[in-house]
Length: 163
Image (cartoon, rainbow, N blue to C red):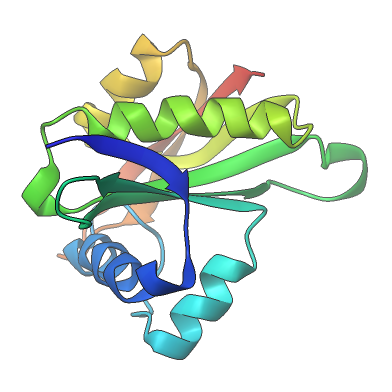
């Protein structure tokens, strides 16, 4: 397996939707409830500042993706936000790290000064360890800020990284 991180192409939408929807359906990391279809997926991904995919160069399969966009507007428009999704088939292979590292570079390339995460679920220890190992700083906790799929609430952690 040889993973390449690149900008998404139209041909990737179906696989991207599947990966995104898998994380949404898990109900433990993404706040979204809606499942993407061909139309809504294309609209969603194309509305982002940048959208990268991790492609297995040997098979052509999309292993993961990320979206990058402003966290806010105007005087806070220099702060970016991002989300990452890795197919369950490819988890544990450092693809998330590759996606976040690429996102940090792309965020700076697009002129963002800070990358901020607003809602990292406290129980998502794999993601939290990854972010902290890449220099993200936790700046706060929102108690019971995330409704888990099973109906209970978990804290969310806010993180930032200077670009």
